[in-house]
Length: 124
Image (cartoon, rainbow, N blue to C red; front, side, top):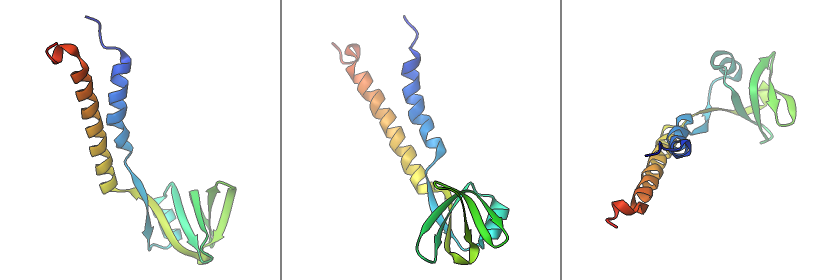
């Protein structure tokens, strides 16, 4: 009997390990941007400015009265007083649980189909 090929183990492991990253969503916060960035050090923040434009900062920093960081267009700064809303990316428990349940059902379905397709399990 041959040992199982590594490919047979990779696909189920990908389905099982995929949810470990969890699902995240942007959640609004009422904390002053300078305090939030200094204390929590988030990887990214999304701000809505008073003119309704939305900017996502990677590795945000606070310098004097400005919030800055990297965006798709480069290094950008915005005045803290122009920030209408501040959002931080956080794990979403309901989305993560739904994702895990979906992946578990997909793995079980995949295994059931493989087992059903084997002739000796169907009595042939």
